[in-house]
Image (cartoon, rainbow, N blue to C red; front, side, top):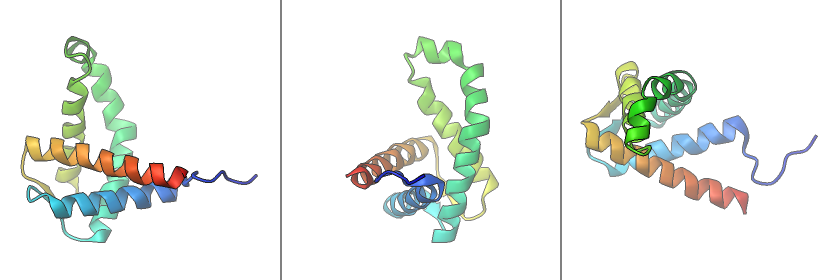
Length: 119
């Protein structure tokens, strides 16, 4: 069975996410990634945390998420980033606002790259 154009697969997703993490961390003084390999590790750990920890946090915080019209999901993203920061040597986030900005910019860069891959 063939793949469609734009179907990047798991390895493609990890590579694109790694590039985004590395590029965005280079632009933000409040986020540090020591090397491209560290960025790859961050991408893998973030993927694992998004599959395991994030759903639990969302489930536990449903009332807050409803009250804030979904904005609390941004806080959950930051918590997941801080968990990755605690687990990975060579990955540092200076605070909540840097983590929030990093999360937003990585998502934006990923969207652009995935959009280009679809064309």
